[in-house]
Amino acid sequence: MDACPNRGPSWPAPPEAANRPDDAEDSHRWSRNGKLFRGLYDIELVESEAIGTVGVGEATIPPIRKYNELLQLDEAEFMRRTQATFKLGIEFVDWVRPGHRYMHGFGAIGQDWEWLRCHQYWLSAHQRGRAGDFADYSINTAAALANKFMHPRADMAESPISHIAYAFQFDASLYAKYLRSLAEQHGVRRTEGRIVRVTTAQSGDIGSVTLEGDRTIAADFFIDCSGFRGVLIEQTLKTGYEDWSRWLPCDRAMAVPCARTDPLVPYTRATARDPGWQWRIPLQHRTGNGLVYSSRHIDDEAAETLLLGNLDGEQLANPNRLRFTSGKRRKMWNRNCVALGLAAGFLEPLESTSIHLVQTAAIRLVRLFPDAATDQATIDEFNRQADFEWERIRDFIVLHYWANRRQGAFWEYCRTMELPETLQRKIDLWQSNGRIFREDDELFSEESWIQVLIGQGILPRSHDPLVAIKSDPQIDKFLGNVAGTIGRCVGVMSPHDEYIRKYCPADAVA
Ligand SMILES: Cc1cc2nc3c(=O)[nH]c(=O)nc-3n(C[C@H](O)[C@H](O)[C@H](O)COP(=O)(O)OP(=O)(O)OC[C@H]3O[C@@H](n4cnc5c(N)ncnc54)[C@H](O)[C@@H]3O)c2cc1C
Image 1 (cartoon, rainbow, N blue to C red):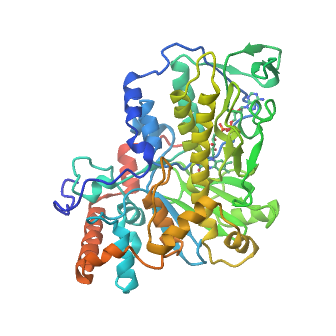
Image 2: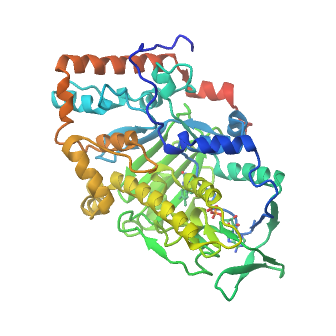
């Protein structure tokens, strides 16, 4: 590994991390402090085995590493316990048109050169018919396509190896069990039972919940993690829901595991289908699959046939059917209740953002933790930050649907729908000179937007005029150098499944 090619002094220090929470210094502070509340609060978790959990959710994005660090999880141990594999990005198959594919790899694209991002030089070469495949300029994408992996090396700041950004593909139910046992070790009391009644005080705040069998639990503050039901935030507080299905028309999902196939690839695949799209997520013990679809464009039986007809291995269980409306609660914090997870809303899983949204909401709650007299300014700030985060992720997902040239009613609808103003503004700016700016602390980096825009075939009318500072031969040499260095780095990386076997082999499942 030490022999990894190095481009030399002109390869700069890594640009801003792939996803903002990667550089959240605060999380380091917390993780060193260990258990956060130190017994300050009495926390009780109520959940019902009879109701169960959604039980899907297998692909994640790089900020989960910071979250796990915050919880002081040992990465190899966590991966063994959750049957995890590494994820370098998402491959989008047939999204632009049947037969087309591209990768949204996490992390950097090539390297900046003076004032400009690498893609500006690529756009210039592309206009002259001299550009290579855009995939060759991302270490993540090139490694994923070669089915290779290695951890980034901080001591190799001069090499693309230091830019590798990764997440995990894992069994979310095992992750939930793992986190629950940690919470219990840290003093959280877990109560099995179904909440059948919720009492509100005269003020309108929630006062207590009553379980089947009549045990009542009173509290000052409630976190609603009851999934799509929203037992507290909606059924009790009637908070209301912003429906985003005019932009994200899929409203059903069907999930089914199949036998693991070889090789174990370090990426999730999202394949467009006539009424939506299908995911494929490789784990150590099995492959997760699912169809996300629009009920206006296919019925459930036909959807099941479509899904089961497109599995790579033997089907291991009956399909799990789910209904949802993409959107979010009007207020994720209402009175003395914060909604987390599916109780807060749902952005369909195309970019694997739901578990991330649970984790950022938990961190946001800690940052804005209320005292006994919760003030409205704190609540409003929580909701403002959450709304911004959700809307920008929504825009990024909508982009994938809108930028298509596929046939069929579903895809024609997506191509012609009116876009959210925030997304339209981004696309307009991109289309003039290929510029994208990350706004405030929105989740997806410029690199992510650039890869999906170029991947989906949305090329700007022209590149940045400052490209002209360099001559065409200089640009071609620069791009050749970047792609060549990345190619040599990928050459020294390990095959992904060999890496998993050595680093974090999980127990076989009977
Ligand atoms: C189709 C689909 C695909 C997904 N894919 C991904 C993915 O690839 N990546 C990703 O990050 N996320 C994904 N997600 C989201 C992910 O599954 C969820 O964010 C995650 O599981 C968290 O769910 P939750 O805990 O909010 O809700 P749930 O899993 O529904 O849990 C709700 C909990 O509340 C309890 N409960 C409910 N009502 C009561 C009651 N009355 N009394 C007591 N307890 C009660 C239940 O027992 C359960 O424990 C996906 C979701 C769906 C629907």
